[in-house]
Amino acid sequence: MAEKTAPVPGYNGKILRVNLSSGNVSTEVLDPLFCRRWIGGAGFVAYYLWKELPPNVDALGPDNKLVFALGPVSGLNLPGGARHCIGTKSPLGGNIVKSETGGFWAGEFKRTGYDALIVEGKADKPVYLYITDKEVSIKDAKHLWGKDTKETEETIRAENNDNKIATCLIGPAGENMVRYSCIMSGLKDAAGRGGSGAVMGSKNLKAVAVRGHKLPKIADNDRFKAIRQEMVARKSGLSEFGTGGRDMPMMVQSGNLPVRNFRDGLFPAEKITGVVIKDTVRIGMEGCYACPIRCKKVVKFEEPYPCDPAYGGPEYETLASLGSNCGIDDIKAICKGNERCNANSLDTISTGSTIAFAMECFEKGLLTEKDTGGIDLRFGNADAMIQVIDMIARREGIGDMLAEGTLRLSKKIGKGSEDYAMQAKGLEAGMHEPRLRLPLGFGWIVGPTGADHMFSIMDANNDMMIGSLRPLGILQAIPADDLGPKRIPMLKAAHSRQVFTDSLCTCMMAGVNADMVMPVVTGWEMTLAEQMLVGERILTAARAFNMKQGLTAADDKLPERYYQGKTDGALKDKPLDKAKMEKARKYYYVLMGWNENGVPLPEKLEELYIE
Image (cartoon, rainbow, N blue to C red; front, top):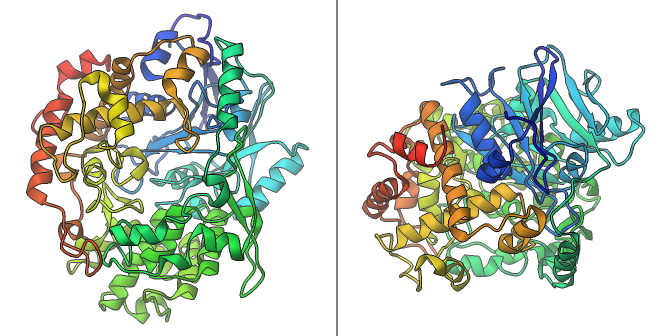
């Protein structure tokens, strides 16, 4: 990329590139100016995909690429620094997608001496990558193909005689190119959204196994240690229950809990909370590398079926997607569903949403027992949900249809079912309610990744967010139902700031303060204005990528169901206002420097150094 220079503190200063078609392995030096403009994580993903993928590339073809990217904080001995980002062109919607995930992979990969891995091409047989600070090998994986994630990781560690190897890997769902298959980081953490596991499977790549030993230097070791001690001393309620604790019944009261394919409002949420898990099936809590919060549930039971604790336990999104959104209040069934998803490398959100959509179609008579192979696929049927998960992973029977995701499935079924296929840009909706949280739904419309709750804004109207944006002259809250000219600039600012944080690859649960950490790790004093500029650059590059791949302003939309009230509960008479959303969308285009068709102007691209 550039002439050789000393790497920025916090960075190794190198990109690793592996072409599976040719077997070629190469490295590239990172320019410090490039690092400051794109930071890492989501920034590196957006840059390399936008720059290197040809127009209208087949998401499941050899020309698509997978980008595994660290941020400057990734892998450091700091709570919240255990994350990395994986991005690609989605086989669901054809747009850019990315996910951050935790575990131990980032810590090991950072120590191999690289800041990112770009995987190109397609191997002619199953392989896995083995990356250390001394070697990069493409190894035979024929003996691993068809195995679940647990057996795959155990085998890789055994044959390389190292129990500390960390893996990013796929199970049968990725091999069979289920369009919403994810890449598992170990057995409990998922780069869940958008189908990156299917892309990995399309390349005949079973796993990326890493083991390293040396961290890069940082700018201020003494201050870094002090910050770590401050963060470790904090208390977090997540340590007791993880996500989905005591608040799920309150989500029913507000209308925020998705129930039966986002159709209904009332549900006995008290039966499926983290509190119930703790009191019944939980055997412990675990955490990511260097993090004391330990927010990850571990569950185990033997009846009515065994549930393997190696796969952890369900977080909030899974409790809602496989639980309330499918009308299921059996906590053991949800835990078992989570186990099967992790074993097969399936995104629990898209899996639950696709099953919920199929359940509604079944109840409406649009799918019959002839289609399902005799399975009574009604809301609330826990046994059917568990059975169908493995069928999806293997693409067997009804599972082959469901493996395509709700967008394609609804087009195949027709008869108005598109209106309740709960997706945006092909991506099934995160388990939060845009009819309650307007910024969330608006972010799903204009955001490059579609209905990803982690790449949108829940609410930019609270005291904490307003306080952080005060240097921009944003001084007070705006009425919650306002999406006018006062609110949209606030959302743009908050979203840009959040995307900057995504480029750091830090965990939002740990509360990493970017203003405090960046000078200590990199030596850069980054103002709020610069952070927002980085975020805007990433969002604009991602938008340019989508346009290059054939998406248009017509893809900036939500399913019709959100413009109707729920059947009961708090949001019964509170649909989204389509005219308000449409007006806000057009104004957002103006603020972002995009034309009336949502295409970034050449001047805006040049301003942001998107050459």
